Length: 553
Ligand SMILES: Cc1cc2nc3c(=O)[nH]c(=O)nc-3n(C[C@H](O)[C@H](O)[C@H](O)COP(=O)(O)OP(=O)(O)OC[C@H]3O[C@@H](n4cnc5c(N)ncnc54)[C@H](O)[C@@H]3O)c2cc1C
Image (cartoon, rainbow, N blue to C red; front, side, top):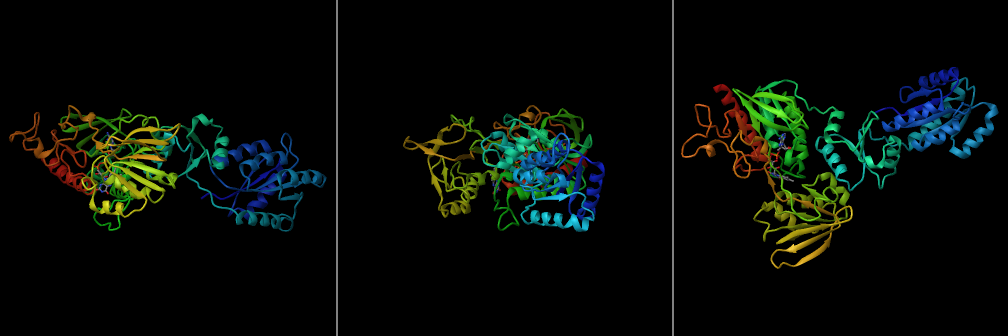
C-alpha cells in the first residue's frame, strides 16, 4: 500500500528545500513528501500519480510562479484529485491572490511565508488539514484497473482472463463511473481503444490481447528449460493433479495451459460432489489451491501458452508452442479436456460477450442483478449456473431441449432448482433467434413439441450446450475416435492386436495413447467418466503409469 502524497511546489529552490525538509521531518513516516519547482512539471507528475492510483492528501503550492501560478496549477490538479486538501504559500503582498484562490479553487488554507518556526506556524495547520483529509479517505485500489464498456466482448474477455488467472483487478464501467471517465482522460487514450488496462506502475494498454497483458504482468509463458521428465498439456483438474503428483514424486514437471488454470471446473460456481468438501467449493478456489500446491512441489507452469503440435524423435516427445518455441520431454500427458460447443442461432455471434455468454464467467453475475436471465442447457453445469445467477437475477429461466431434467442432471441439483422460487424450467424449448441493438434484448423461443414460438425479453442468455474435444493438433500422431477423443489402453487393442505403429514390446498402459510415452487423462480421453473427481483421479494415476514407462526405457 503506497503512502498518501504531500505535494510541495515552489519555484524558489531554497524555499522548496526548506518546506520539503520540514514536512519530511514531521510526516515522512506516514506520507510521501514530493516536490516540484514549477506548476507545469508538478501537473505532469500528478497525472502519473493518478495513473498509478496513488492517493494525494495535500497540495502545498506557492502562488507566485512563472508560466503557471499556484492557483492555475490547483485548478487543474483538483480535477484529478478533488478530495485533496489545498494550501497556498503566499507573501503578504499576495493576500488578494489568496482571496481569489479561496473563491476559485476552494483553497483550504493560505500560509504566509516565512513560516519559521514550523512547530508554531506550519505543523498545526498541516496537522488539521491532514486530519480532515484522513477522516473521509477510503484507501484506493492499487492493482490493475480495467476501463471499458459493460457490453463489449473485449472487456468481458479481459476481465475473465484476470479473474481466472487470479490477478486482482478493478472494473470501471465507462458508461456509469465518473472515475472511469477521468482515468481515461488522464491516459489520453481515445474511447475507440477501450478497454484500456491501467497497470499499477501507471502504464496502460488500449484494447490489448490477453497475451500482451500476460507479458506486461510478467505471467510466465516461456519454459525455463529445454527438456523435462514430464510435460502436462492443459491445467484443468486432471492436469493440475498430474502436476502436483508428478512434481511431488520427483519428476521434473512442466504444465502448459492455454487460458487459465482450472479448465472447465474454473467456471463452476460450486462443485458439490468433490470428496472432502461437504459444503462444496468453487472451481476458482480449487484451481488456486492446486496451483499453489503444484508450485510448492516444484512444478513449473506456463499460462497463457498453447501447445500447437507434437512430434516424436526417438525417446523424446517434442512440443511446439504458440510462440514458435519448442520443449522436449521423456513423457507427455495430454489433459486438454473439452471446449464448449457453439450454437448456430441467428444473432448470437454478433452479440456474444454483450449479454450472451458460453459458460459465463461468474464475475458477470453482479451485472445482471434484478435482470431476466435465460440459460440454455439441462446438464449439471447449466443447473449450477441457474442456482448461482438466481441469487442476483430477478428471474432465471432454463431452456431445456429434452422433456426431463433428470436425464441429464444430478438429483441433488434438480431438487435445489425445484426449491428455488425464481428459477423456472421450460422443457422441450430451444432458442431460435437472438436480437438486440448492441446487447441481448430479446429471444425467440420455440416449443419443440408444438412448434409454437414466443418472443421474450432477456437481459442475458447463458449457454451450456455441451462440449467437444479440440485435438486437431494431435491428428496423425495419436489415434483419436470420430469425435476427436484420444483413445488409450485396452480401447486401442483390436482383436488382441496392438495399434498400428506401436513400437514398445508390451501392450499400451491403461492411460497410454497409441504412441508409447504419450498419456491421456480426464475429459479428453475416449470413454472417460468425465467430471472433476475422475479427472483428478486419472491425473494422479497417469503419473504412476509415467513412472512405469520411464522405468521401462
Ligand atoms: C460450469 C461447469 C460446472 C461444472 N461442475 C461440475 C461439478 O460440480 N462436478 C463435476 O464433477 N464436474 C463438473 N463440471 C465438469 C468438470 O469441470 C470437468 O469434467 C473437468 O473440468 C474436466 O477436467 P479436465 O482436466 O479433463 O479438462 P478441462 O477442465 O476441460 O481442462 C482442460 C484445460 O486444457 C487447456 N487446453 C486445451 N487445449 C490446450 C492446448 N492445446 N494447449 C494448452 N492448454 C490447452 C484448456 O484451456 C483447459 O484449461 C463442470 C463443468 C462446467 C463447465
